[in-house]
Image (cartoon, rainbow, N blue to C red; front, side, top):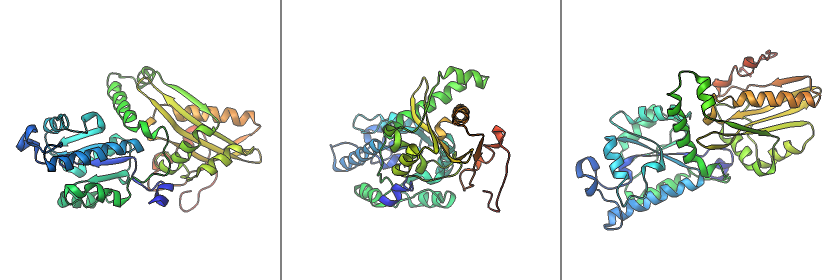
Length: 344
């Protein structure tokens, strides 16, 4: 599990919790006063402990969402129960309806710009697990049998193992709530440029710095969609790039009126004669279409020119997840000079 964590293969950022896992009974049938949650009865204590476990996961960067066959009003009533440890604000998304759960999961994956293989689908119904596993093969579907065993079973799976914990991890839930606020704000604007202006964004773009080495390394191991080369790096790798004179390195932070998004994009280029070869370029999908890639390109080009380079050379190595950036360099006027049989 530790090795998986080092190479970004854990499910750490995203935990899907089905609503009836967090209390005993069915709120739609039993009413909010009839569900088992809290210390008054043994069954309720078990569910309270599981809720506490889920809430504690947030401290290592796990975010929670609900995928439930239920009326939304009933789901919210249960989460607002006075003995509930988890409350609606603890979840980045709540899908409580009567749609198939695999469809709900797909919809929220798209909403959060995530791949299905980022998710753990925690459900005590084997039929629901089977459907999700069949329709979304990348989703982890651990077997959960008996509320008293939920914590042990999830821990045993090693889904949330972490070896690197950055300050940004601690803000994941708040960042996704802020993203939802920004999406709601966009609906008020017919012009996308005016919407971007309304976000009051401020970008900070600087060479790699010691305080962010851990976060930069983490991004190289977790970013898959907006990632042109999928070069995976350790902290030592990142530190080496920063210290070598033949490299130009940049990280970008973005703050808007809703949140501090933290370090969201990374570029690193290595000298080859008078050409700067871009070995690493990635960006968090949380800030897609905000103009950060343009700001990074402008800053990179200026720094490269100031250092005496006469050309930039970019690379794209296709994976199952990064098709969105296939034409990234072409969009900036780069000319394709070579391509192999695998599309590299």
